[in-house]
Image (cartoon, rainbow over all chains, first blue to last red; front, side, top):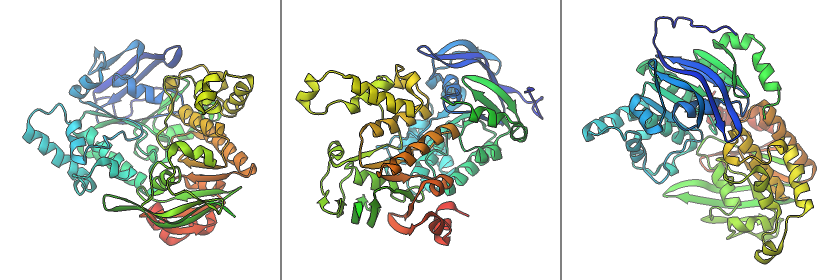
Length: 249
Length: 244
């Protein structure tokens, strides 16, 4: 499928993956993948289980062993290391929430803002992030393990926003959430993207919710990008049928 | 006759009533779908039924006669109960095959020392992994698997328990259509084998397709129960859960 740059020509490419390959031992998880994310853009990664979607996010955040290729930040090649990526403005919200269950909501946010040295600035950021998720403000002293699944997901998102990232990497934000909460979480993601101009790269199996907010979609299969387009064109094509009816494992 | 029953089951966490006087019945040969908003107590219920948590009040009754008052997680297998977890818990540094063999082989200390892997263990593991379409990957380390493959393997490990009661906590979450079909097929098969299946699930299409009986929880309480069509059309269920 043709590479498209609809309304994006003038905007800067924030992050670029050039021929990135990832291998876990002998397993080829990604094969020469080329992808970009622009400023203020929501890019969706979809494909069957095992296609390499989460691996792309992990590669960008320095959590996957890169076998070959380059990752560029504002056109300059860098070797991603997770905590250094946060300094660049890249944060990762992993699959399955992964909040620190023995820490309070507020302490989880403090961990998310670990690069902020000034205490007053840290408190200002916590207040700002709590403003986006008022439900967390009411429970800021509660151990996060006591929060419901939806609230934990909100907290994971909030923690990712603590450093006011330029790119937010989201891995399956709807996992384990009820239909009502999924709507709320996706509305928040769109709100963050619009109000803060945060670029978002998102892996999500709930295609309906995903396509409502995505600007551009990469379809992956067996470690390769097999299509790239706007959501409407992806739906019109038969690519989803092809990749999802072929063996996913 | 119910194979598993809860009577006034209650669990509190620091003043929050996670499960509140819940009385439900689980029957053999049926899929009991449990739905409800996040925080409604579904997973806490599974944790109580599997001994991960102890109830503050109420009882769990097995086969109309055995009261499970203080069960521990490591003893539930002896009562014919097995479970999966929402967040997959496997032995990451072992192979797929070994994760299944761990379940199939002896648990008794002396028997385990003396036991050698026999062909029938491998055959049984093979049958399970082939059902899951993971046989070709049997020598791979679990840490290298995708989320979906890990989810399938955890279901495989539950199958290896050969239990009577399967407590499945969101087995379809994060799975794409092809893998959903595999899991759906396994649940159909378990039902045909007269097993009792408790299925926590947020996808209403799956609940409609698989459940014989739906239990709706909200704030720890039983909000509604009955056949899927009757329950899912009720206004209070739609408002509390679907947000429509």
